[in-house]
Length: 194
Ligand code: AP5
Ligand code: MG
Image: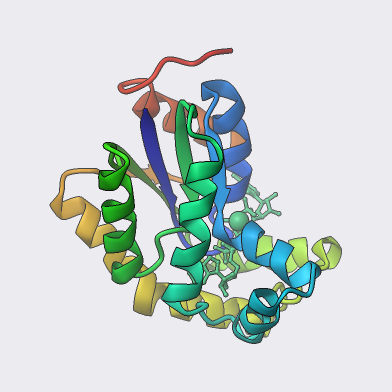
């Protein structure tokens, strides 16, 4: 099994690159943002609670997010591996993920961090906001999401760096060029299936 964390600020291309990686390497995609938006659209109690935070660009409480992840991993016991997109976002989430994977006799093998300058992040997300329908793709909320990333999520990269798992990738080249660079790192662990 191969488990990858795709790390980076809002708008760095985690979702975009996940799509390419999961088909090329036959991995399962776990995006906490997508899972939460699904809960919101189905008006579940979890979704109603999460929406309050998401609409303000704040992180949803750890226990809510951690609770969602475990079941998702169990859904596909024969998976070749997982891409974690937008998770973990805090140190407690990173610790919980380590414990969860250890329990399943596996671990995080690699963390690829997409580096993109802030002005480019804002430009991309404001542009996406014109069509995405995402309530958090407004300039005001985007700025809050980036602030929250610096305050709570960036320390997670330091944690993985201390464990020798972190690699930085330039994320403001074209989608194709960025994918090539990401692939070079993944190929050290796993061969493409396509
Ligand atoms: P989440 O859905 O995870 O959003 P995010 O991390 O804020 O960022 P995005 O998904 O908007 O960006 P991305 O990096 O995936 O970039 P994308 O590929 O879309 O989280 C949303 C909210 O949910 C959070 O604010 C929080 O409230 C909650 N949440 C989620 N997970 C949580 C957790 N673990 N704990 C607590 N709360 C959590 O690309 C962006 C745009 O750029 C697209 O339009 C794309 O086409 C374009 N683009 C991509 N790559 C390129 C490129 N190379 N060149 C030009 N354009 C590009
Ligand atoms: Mg995303």
